[in-house]
Length: 204
Image (cartoon, rainbow, N blue to C red):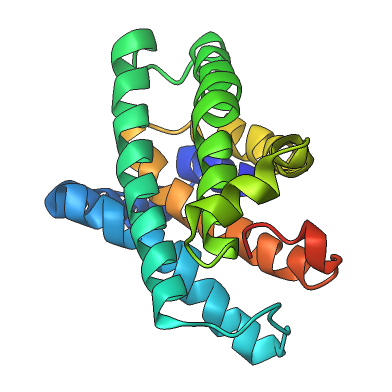
């Protein structure tokens, strides 16, 4: 991500390529936002899983694929809305102070209070075969915090430096590069989940 930022501001060819990506996003609108994140988060990691023969904790079902696709498509819409909202709140000038403000809001409020808690709840529901009583059983007696805290720490470790770079780019490029980072994030989860005990697997 750091190299992308440096390349954008120093290499004209990188700026030209980024302009094409930004145009795709502008022309695709909300549909692009939803489908690009869903593909990056579901399809690409699944291809990587099969190519590297990373084992699954349970068989992949149509219901599971549908759930993940809908979840990440909704996340794409939320992220697109977040970036536009941050631009309204703090402005679109990629100055160090604006980057810091956006980064704190993103990591502490959006991730800490919205996206990570929602992920814990929804994936507990998925792990319980889409049964609400089973999901509640998994989350009670400290089960929520056992899932939430490690996930949030992993999120911050990955996304803090990534988003510091992405918020340094012009606003019309932030979502496009966030999609690429989302693919890397989900590949990380796939790799990590294959090394965890059964009870610690959350999202992959």
